[in-house]
Length: 212
Image (cartoon, rainbow, N blue to C red; front, top):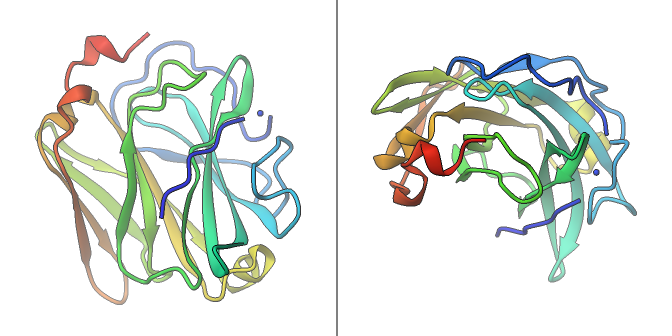
């Protein structure tokens, strides 16, 4: 079940000096376990906490993830909120996605898109959820293979955000040309490998159409 939300600043969000080479998405420091300093729609009245931040590999731009729990149509859900930077503030665009609570253990690429609502310069961002045991996630595409950043929502953090069991969130950014073909996402951990695929997204194939 997808929910699109947009809104405002937290994480290590200084601008890069210039476009970064397409590479692994890497963790950055932020206030894990604390509430975001910007407004997260749907998270103002219940459990909400930052679970991790990253510097995206293709654009060098920041993203911060928070999680909250809420009831949607009488059912318990966990919502994952990626916060993108625009207009000098983190959290200007938050395309949240909600899933059932507990979060399914299967690998799920919840989003594969170019963030462009009130933000600029981002490239093709893939993110989703996985089992708590996952340690590494890699996106395999026509241009090669790119490592994701993985945020573990362990037992204590899961309780903080109202999740019924631990899980993981991953994020990776690719050059838009990778969207011309299907992308294989592979996760590995003690419980074994898991895979998911995205469909081709021709509208993102042309890099000139999405870059600053």
